[in-house]
Length: 179
Image (cartoon, rainbow, N blue to C red; front, side):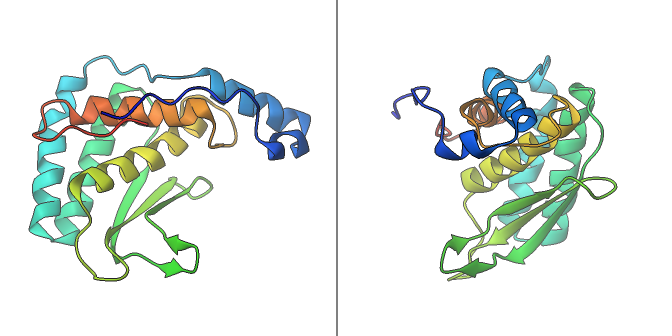
């Protein structure tokens, strides 16, 4: 079992280089640990459908299933829509592989996820895909639900991501790691 991460005692160095408004947004993000998700069991059929689609290795089916899951989650949170696109092989460079990215300034905002590893072109593991989807969705929620105007990787951000992963992994056959 993974130990629960503790809140860092000090803020990251870059925090002190941020403009005062962004410092306030960073601190506001850091204070929110969970999302106001009321009936998580309503998304379980969509989670199962996404897993089945990922196992089928059909990117069109994965895109449709991921979009349906996100639509149900956003409706439950009363948050505006986001478009989801699933692509094949992850782009990579010396820094590693890109798992997903969020584009907040498109209309509607857009999440792009990659379903195949860069080196071996294999489908990514279910847990990895689900965590990446949750990560990018939390970026969207920072803008759309929390109205932060920016989405920093704060301690609170990663708590929200882990909260969402825990909610989405209830009833799956393997335990999801927590941050």
